[in-house]
Image (cartoon, rainbow, N blue to C red; front, side):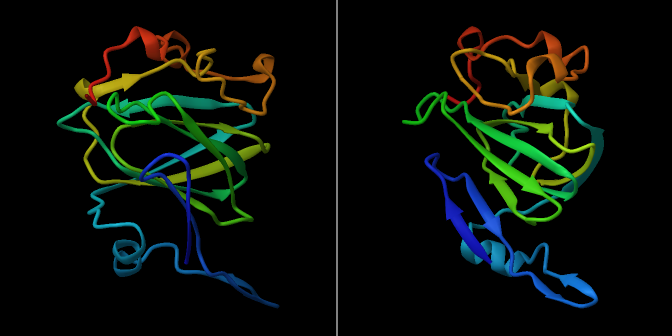
Length: 183
């Protein structure tokens, strides 16, 4: 696998080795040994999957300590723009983000360490999104920031009029309005 570092410490893009022939393709989507060697020791405990249609934007979510989560995300069908925002106050990249296109065609994965807010928007008619977490979900530890916070200046590549949000995701505060739990 090829690991691409990003400007945010700990956030990496992973490109697996894909083997193709006349029958289709094969790749190892996850190997604990290879992940530990290339990225670091993370023990994943929960896998999640969602299916969404064009314009659905989920995020920007995080789990507060002591239930913070690292995530390894990928798309198995369709295409999304996936975003990690550094919300670690002591980080030199606090408030900065990395956006990457994940698709069923490029097979890329995106690793986000604890201390990142995460979100994605669907660019294709439909997308199936999968992710691994290193901590179980705890509803009482939920946190989020506004997807359209002007200070973040995220280019979602979907016109705002086409963005589809849950009621909850439409009411998140801006990053400047929260006390980051990652001091």
